[in-house]
Every structure is written in C-alpha cells, then in structure tokens.
Amino acid sequence: MPLKTLTLAPQLPPGLILFPCLNRPNKTLKFHQVLVFILTFTAYAAFHASRKPPSIVKSVLTSPTLTNGTTASNSDKGSFNFTRNPLQNDTGWAPFNGAHGPHRLGELDLSFLLAYSVGMYFSGHIGDSIDLRIFLAVGMLGSGIFVIIFGLGYFLDLHSFGFFVTIQVVCGLFQSVGWPCVVAVVGNWFGNARRGLIMGVWNSHTSVGNIMGSLIASSVLGIGWGWSFMLPGIFIVIVAFFIYLFLVVNPENVGFDLLGKEVEMSGEGVALVDSENNETEDVESSIAIGFFEAWRLPDVASFAFCLFFSKLVAYTFLYWLPFYIRHTAIADVQLSDKTAGNLSTVFDIGGVFGGILAGFISDVIGARAVTSLQPLWIIWFQVKERGVDSNGTGGSRRSSSLSPWAGPPSNYPSSLSLPNCRASSSSHSHNEMMMVNSEEASHPEKLKFAREDFALSQAAELILRK
Image (spheres, rainbow, N blue to C red):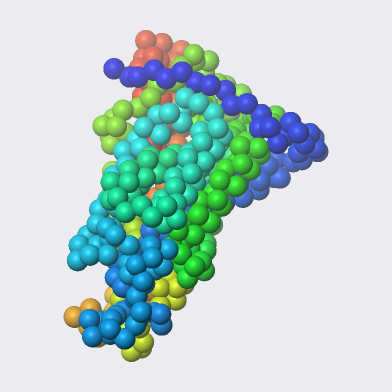
C-alpha cells in the first residue's frame, strides 16, 4: 500500500527578504538559476571537502615518522629524539599507531559509509516532507560540527576508538542529507535540455571539494592533524549559513513558472503535469515510492549498478590514495605526508575535466550510456603503454602517472547516471500521461490507476538518492 507523506511548502529564504532587490522584477530567471547552481555546487563541494581529512591524516596517525618525512625503522629510532607529547605527530596516534592501525582506520571509513548509506534512504523520505533549504542547512551544520569535534580529539588528547567511531557514524548521517537535497533543487531549476553538459559541470563539485579538502588539510598538517579537521569543518559551517539565507528551492517560490514542459517533480514531491497547458493535479498529499517499487522503474537498475561500481573505485581513491602515495616510493623518493596529500589531488583534477567532457560528448552524440565505455579504453591503453609491476611497488613511478588518467573515468558514470535516470523516467512518465489524458473521457474508470502509476514513475531518481 502506498505511503502518504505530508508536504510543507518552502518559505522564502531570509536573504531574499533582507535584500528585496534579489527578487522579481529586479532579477531575472537566469540570475536565480546561476545563484542556485553556485550555491548547490559550493554546498556539495563543502561536503566532500569535509570528508577528505581522514584520508590525509592516515599516515600521520598510523606509523612513526622522522622529521624529514621518511618512515623510521627500528635502527633509526635511536638517533632521533621522539616525544610522547600527544600534540606532536612523530609517534603516531593511539589507537591507530599499532600493528592494526590501518585496519582500525578502515573500520572508521566503514562506519562512516554504513551510516551514510542508511541515512541516504531516510534523507530521501524526509526531504520530500520539509523545506529542502532548511534540511540541507541542518545537514551541513551538523556535518561541520562533528568534523570539528573529530579534530578536537587531537587537542583534548583523546585516544578512545569508540569516540572516533561514534563521531564518524553521526557525521555520516548528517552527510547523507547533502546529495538528495542538492539533486532535488537542481532538478527543480533546470530542464532536460543539454542536461549532460549541465550535470557534467555541476557534478564536478565532488572533485573540486576533494581538491579543496586535500589542499586545506595538507597545508596545516605540519602544525597538528587536528587542524586538518578544524578548517574544513569551519568551511562547511560558513557555507551552510549562505545556503540558509539564499537558496531558493523552487522557481515558483520567487514567482517564476516551472521550466519543464514535460512532467517534473516539485520540491515538495508533488507531481506537476503538463505545465505547458497549465494543467496540474490538486492533491493533498504525495505518494512516496517504496524501495522495491523503485527497482521496477525503467533503467533504474542499470544506472544504479553503474553508479555502484564507479563509486567503489572513486571512494577507494578518496580514502586511501594519499596513504598509498605516502608509503610508496615515487621516482625513488619517499614523499612527506603533506606532499602525498597534495599529489593525490591530481586524481580529482582529472575527474573535473572527465565529468565535463563526458557530459559534452553525451549531448553531442545523443547516446549517454556509450560514454561509460570510454574509461575502459583509457585505462587499458595507459596500462598497456606504461605498465604496472605485479608487486605493486616497483611500478610506483608508472602508477603515479596513471592517477590523472584514472580521475576522468571514475567521474563519467557519476556525472551521467543521475540525469540519464531522471530524463528516462521523465520521458516515460510524460508518454504515460499523454495516453491517460487522451483516454480519460472514454475510460474514466482507468484514470485512478493510471494516475497512481504515473506518481510512482516520477520517483525514478529516488533509487539513486536513497
């Protein structure tokens, strides 16, 4: 039986009340589109920036290091003065500096991602019921606070593994708010025209956020790993303030008509039908699609699995690439923790260009799924030409050169899966509703069931949001 969810109309953002010049007729629709694009882009970039510190500080937390950035062996420890002061980074950080330190750091990542995945499902439902602007701002504020609290463990000399796990779990729940909210808002403001290029540019926020987080966290690593968490946490809190003040969830909130001539979903989760003819459905509540029902929708399963495997690769690089670079000699040189963190951004730089390029190509050739094959050719060509040694270390010089080439392929599916699924479901729903409207007079008894099928098909994108 379909679930019923109450809807709450979004309020006008306080920033637009304080500055009436930002409203119509002083500002055009194009201005508000650009504003929403920038705000949602910056918001999710801030989310990803606050996820990067754990990967940057892994090497600092696990093993003792010398002052020149090389790993200390047992024979070296006698000639260097190591301190037990917890505010120094030379001895690692309990409970991560033992033999099982990397495993415990992996458990931290696991706890975050488990909470994140569970939270994504419920965030999709909650986001359909409340003002997305407030919901997104709360998620960003909570994320920033708990990232800061994680960093405070350095200053307060905390060494409890349970403390760090708890922080990661709660932070994962708050982080799960981001993606459903920004996707819904962007979907309200932008139509399907040239959706590949638009989503390709917009989806580069993940790589931009990773770059920002890596550079910020690495820049202060020398004065204490706690600062690597404090600064990204403060950054996302500041961005949350601007989201709360200025983000407009839906064009109708500022007096603009909906852009889509096809069927779209409003920010409140209500189906808006045939907006070109000003025909809408008056419903008191919206139908929330179930998890298993979403899998029955066209193209949902294929795009979901595509995104699953691409994220499997992307998150491996996100969490462990700096650690790998730090512990692998590159050109026979052992890099410092700071340099390893900065060098890891090359992967995300490739991701920025790769996502935009994939979106542009998909718009030109009109076959969006074909671009997913390009990563296989690029990786095969690079491995064939450069080679990677089987022991994983001798080929480190070559493997480091593969980093920028691995960035674009990992970002292709992420840039295109969501707009593909959304567009496919939108077209499917539009065709269904045209048939319903034409047969409504002659078969009124079928109208109720057709409307319910239409409402279900509108939620195809939710399987990616949840």
